[in-house]
Length: 490
Image (cartoon, rainbow, N blue to C red; front, side, top):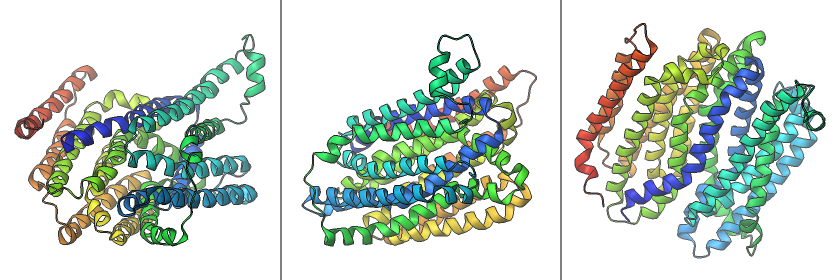
């Protein structure tokens, strides 16, 4: 199979449950924002920001390390079990420690009165960190269908329980004559409120662990301490890069809850978090692409035309990203209704965050140069560079312009990382990217969006039609330039 077609096929298989799940979660946004106040949703936003940090910390780069050492070591089984045992012990230690100090932790992260949140999230994070290795093994072995099936079931459980608790149970609880009232009174309490989002996630994580049992128990466990030291030496820079990456991705929501006035902090965090979800379509594509691309890049590295393939991948990746950017912004007039009216004042962050996540995706494509050459410390340095920009700009801007400062800080951070990585990559592992096309598509999509902001008629329908004509025009331009490249692919 043509390598680009193979990558596209695996992206679709790996991405299908993630795309569907993220889209369904996206559709849950109205459920949350119409049922909870911005301050309550701010608690949810802040909680998952902390989760992102801790999940990176507890996986400490072992997924990428598994891919790397499975290529260099003859005994792949030993690589797998060594990494799996390492994650098991660290995850178990984390769950026990967090549960023991749950009250103190709850006070520190502003969840005072809810130590149960800390326990629930400790189990979620520990379980998800541990199961990251079986999932990585499935990707390394190319078992995309099993990977997708388990992900789909987990997502289904999470979304199903959200609908059950927040929609069904709440409705029945408020309807004293319902025949389901006795049952609902037994399983539902309005005092838990936003906590039902966390409970749903907890159940999904535990079911995922059960479904991955064959990958966990049907192996002969060997822990090679010497191999583990080499693996940790490779993975620790990735951990630093991952933590710095989480600073770039989620620290803004934590800082918003601390740097804004106490009476508005969670409200503004909730508004920003809800509008951030509108831009999630870009994140979905980048994440699903990454699932397939990372093992693809490693497996294809020995091919004679590998660098040419990487350049072509970048070109098509940017095309999809620009289509996502324009498609979202040309239809923002109706997409905005996915968040409650109290949250829509933050819509100005959406185009900024879409572009920011596009640049992050480009940076990920470029990152193959330091992973293939084993110079993962460059990844850490680049991400730390971005983290410094994130911290400085957020601390400066949040007290002055609130969440708009967070959005602009994210864009500047990822753009800076992308540019720095490009120049370093040229020096250490030069890939001849088609800059004229890549930059041209990005510039054209931003220009067309800018033009669309001047389209204002008395009819929202006419506005949407005109905006989507602009989108179609962009598609025709792309097709004109790419048709000659696409046709030879067989």
